[in-house]
Image (tube, rainbow, N blue to C red; front, side, top):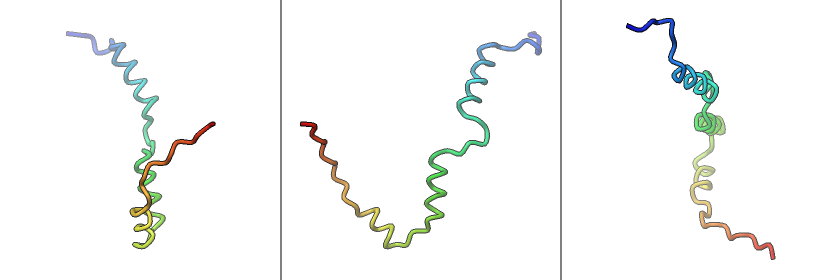
Length: 64
C-alpha cells in the first residue's frame, strides 16, 4: 500500500500546467461571442445580410 502523503510528481506537474492554461472561471471565446450575438439582438433582415454576404475568396494582394 502506498503512503497517501507521497504525491505523484508527473501528476502534480500536469495538474499545475492544466490550471495555468485553463484557469477556473475563464470565459471561452465561443461563449463570449454567443453572448455578444444575443445582446446585439439582430433583426431578421440584419441577420439575412450576414448570411447572404459574398463568400468568394479574396484575391491575394500583389506586391509588385
